Length: 300
Image (tube, rainbow, N blue to C red; front, top):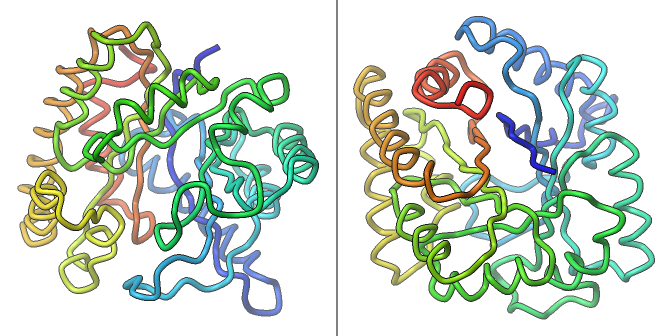
């Protein structure tokens, strides 16, 4: 079963104020509908992807405050978004098997069509954490979660073997890190050549507003110190942040075309995952609309 979808990432709001973030959650749902309509893609976003947020490094450019739980956020926005289902990421490394099973069952029952299992933050090593490793979760819960995802970072050293192992363990889809180069093309071409696995790939593209030049959150999110491929992507992000909107859309569309043209015939089912890291906006949706006009899973 493939998702075959256009998904939009919505980060749960901070848990603050008398309503615990409920008003902000409703504002986000309203923005999704309004921005989609203004950009001419009303009704085409079929999933929202809600990340399960965990605290990371102290040097995060925007302070991480306690976030609303994924299930609570979804319960508020789902009635506002008819015809839209959920995807999410679930940190597994700090839950024992029984607790994680209970959590996954609740997510599936609430309408989450796909769950990507993620591990420890960058401050810890793989395998640390008292709970279930993501690769173990992929096989343990294959009867409970039909679409089981893994994060795919095509520029990361050793990712071919890492992603193959996750597919061997039962991953049915890979959700890429934000793509600011066409490195995913060579990655998937090599993966197709050397394995029989054909998981669905959610290609992730993110809008870069002008504020990125001052704050640097996207630059921080994609960092991999010492990795020249990522350094090139960071330079591209800086360029996007500093050009005028028309040039920004052109650069993003050119990247999107290179990626789509390079992977569309490799045999992997494809979905599109869109991110507005600093919040939803009409300029971001206008860029997404141009990209989807070139190719989208609902109009291949």
